[in-house]
Image (spheres, rainbow, N blue to C red):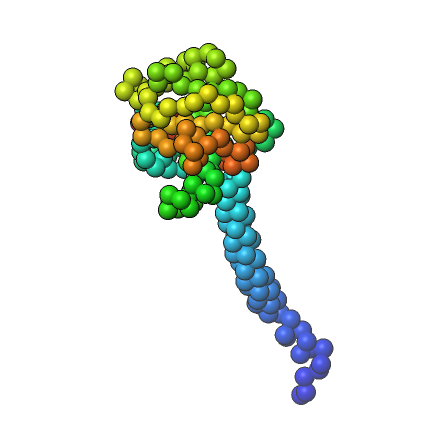
Length: 211
């Protein structure tokens, strides 16, 4: 006896057939979901990397101390954190330790790689600076440099001079070895060449401290 069309339809739509069809749909949905979850995770990682890169290049920059010109405040090899936003709405103040670029001519004449230097701001635009017997005077008054070790005082003589507006006069704390604004090849540093302010020493951790 021939099977009726509606009976054949009932056979193919048995409970087992329905379960199998639902399972196939769930598998298809799961495969698509896994793909999107993987893509979403990848985009999340890219976003994190971009945020970290932005923080490093725009906000806070870890920089390695290179050399002995800032002894004993900063030690060669230490990692310091530089705040690149510190001077967005204000200018450097006397006593600030800053990261800056020297004039282009300095690197060319010295045959050095174009790189930042870390120094202390001693005078700002409009100030008059000079040294007398190794001591630094700003606007006719001897400044307190208690941060200097006794054997770090001295170095290059500074004749009385007025710092141009829009510039800062920088020195290293290890005066006898630091090449800084006291030298004609460096001179006062224009504010646009000041990268940021050193906030703290981060590494090695046992020596971590605020600046």
